[in-house]
Length: 174
Image 1 (cartoon, rainbow, N blue to C red):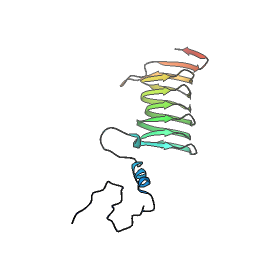
Image 2: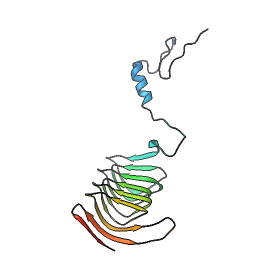
Image 3: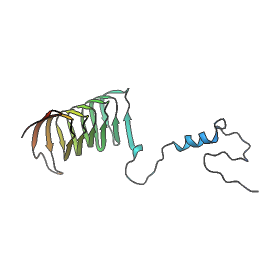
Image 4: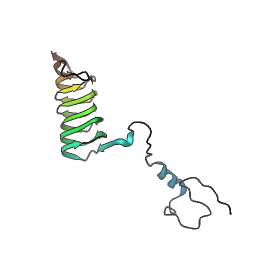
């Protein structure tokens, strides 16, 4: 009695039973199985550890969690992901206080941001509110109106800087 070995996702030629995907050509069946996300337990968080709020979604309330969040829709309320990354896309509109490890902004945020590591406001981004972080980057052309508190780990407030920054220039008072 000999068995033929086949690759996963390929029907066995000696099989007399119909596969549930038998109407799908073998190549399409392979493509469908290879496009599934792969989950591994090695290493820190991966792209599969990211939640997404789509363009058509609007959330009013509090978002709390432990995985990274990509926002493409609208949120009003509060976002609390202290050990994760929050990314606000170009199309996103966020009217919320954000607490996260890292915040990257391409869209519009109205609210205070508290990051344990860094805040990155890209050139298309807009922030109206106070920012507290160890590091902050404001790209050319970005809009920022509020206060900046650069804090070191384990310390309270070091220094507060009030700033209005836009593509037209910057006005800063310490």
